[in-house]
Image 1 (cartoon, rainbow, N blue to C red):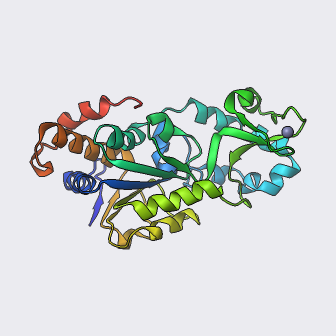
Image 2 (image 1 turned 90 degrees about the vertical axis):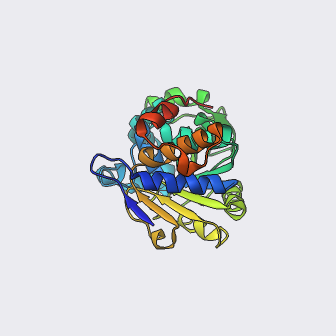
Image 3 (image 1 turned 60 degrees about the horizontal axis):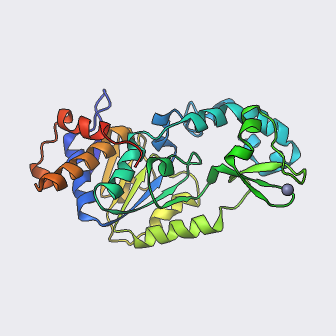
Length: 285
Ligand SMILES: [Zn+2]
C-alpha cells in the first residue's frame, strides 16, 4: 500500500493506523535509517538536491584525498562538524527509542548516519555501519580517542594529532574504505532476527547498506518511510512518502496510547490533537 502526504506535510490517517498495526504485531523490529531521519535535527543530507555533495566535490571524502592532505579535509569539514555536535534528537529518533522504552518492543537500529543521535535519543542497540563522529583514531599507531580529545581542533578546522604525532581520522567510513566488520555483522544479525523491517529516511542508493533489506526473512513485513521513491518500494508492505516526523512518531504514539488504555489500535482516536501531546512528552530516554 502506498500513501503520500498532503501538501502541508501531513500523512494520511490510514497510513498512521496501518503503521501502528504493523508495529503492534511485531516484537522484533529492525530499523534501517539514513540521512532523512536526521534532517529534522538540522543535519544536512549529503545526497539530496541541496546536500553537501552539490556544493563541493565528494572527492574530499575519499580516503586517498584525506591521506594526501588532512588539513584540507578538516578545514572543509569544520562547519558540518559544528552542526552535528550541536544537533539534538528529533521526534523520529525519539519515536524509535519510545518503541523500545515505552512499548516494550525489541528494537535494533542500523544506521548510515554518523551523528550518534539514535544513541542520544536512548536506543540501546545501534549499529553504525558508516561509523561515528564520536571517536577518531590515529593513522600511525591506531590509538582511539573520544570526542573531548579532538573536538576543539575539529571545530577550528585543524587536523587533530595523536600523542605519537600521527594525524587522527574520524571513525567514519570514507569513500574507498570498507565498512567496519563488527558493525556490519551486527546489522546483518539485526535483519535476520527481525519480524518487521522499517526503512526510514534513506533512498537505498548506497551499497552495501542498500542490500541489507534482502537479508530479512522474506515473510517479514517491510515498510518504507521516505520522502522519495526507493528501488525496493515495489516489495514493501507499506510505503509512506512523507517526512519521518509526519508518520513514525504518530504511529508510535498511537501504539503507546492503545497499550496504555488497553484498547485495540483501530479503536483509538487518531486525532492529531490527542497524539501531539504524547509525541511532545518524549525526551531522551
Ligand atoms: Zn598515534
